[in-house]
Amino acid sequence: MSKFKFDMQLFAYNDKIARTDVNIPEEVSKEILQDIPKASLMMQLMRKLPNMARGVAKLPVLSTLPNAYFVNPTDTGHKQTTKQAWENVSITAEEIACIVPIPEAVLDDADYDIWGEVKPRIVEAFGALFDAAVMFGTNKPASWPNGIVTQAIAAGHTVTIGTGDDIADDIGGDGGVMSLIEADGFSVNGFAAASTVKAKLRGLRASTGELIFQPSLQAGTPSTLYGSPIVYDENGAWNDAVALMVAGDFRQALYAIRQDMTYKILDQAVITDADGVIQYNLAQQDMVALRCVMRLGWVLPNPVTRKNTNKATRCAFGVLAP
Image (cartoon, rainbow, N blue to C red):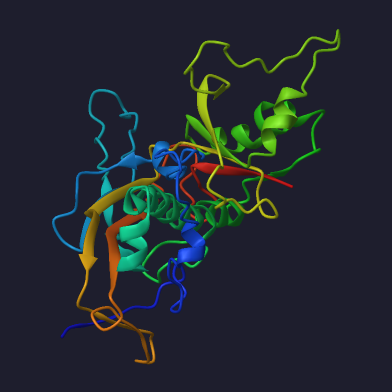
């Protein structure tokens, strides 16, 4: 009999789907009405690399730019040499996983597909975990870089809301978040924000009273800000106390998948906690469990630009702070 040991924050070791959690009625509609699960906020904006062939991949990043010189004197002067250099940046795939146990009797008595309802919520949980690690470094693996917000703050790319005339000035005005990024040689092509920012943007008015921020009324039209897409936190990964919005060149934020999300039904396993204490013996307790696993990594290379060759103060992202 095999043993599965794990240590995941997504899963408390003594958790399971009980009969009371399912709320099995005698007669119910086959359809469960619920919000559409929200996947990863950051993966909507970040650049996806080809799937990783191994657990660690090296990416060449431009670290030194070539220079050009005038030849003096024109006819007989020597032409100077220059160079261009790269440095390797590692992207490491780390594992995200969880196990959802459930008694077989509960599965048999349910009037709807429990696994069909559980899987989208697991996708949502995986996305929230990834977003929190990428944006704020929350519970990040040691091999992953600091979060985007952390790196932007360290580079001095922070504007506190209320600094300018209004939130639009704080984001896009002279001295706003976008100007800090552009001064480093990057172009802002996306925004990620806390859901509370929606109301702040909707409330913007011109001096004559007209609303300024007017999203398209056409169905299915993505939200934009200054012509670039903006996505809002809907999976609970955002930390409003640290940042209200992140603007940046999301082409510089890269992620790659080593193993796409896979599901496996366990029925003979013994599930233990990190100390080896048995929590569930699936065969003995007439239970099954859904094991979900995914491996992926991300990196923010921070290539050199003509406008800023200082790595410590260069960043492709900026933060609107509360």
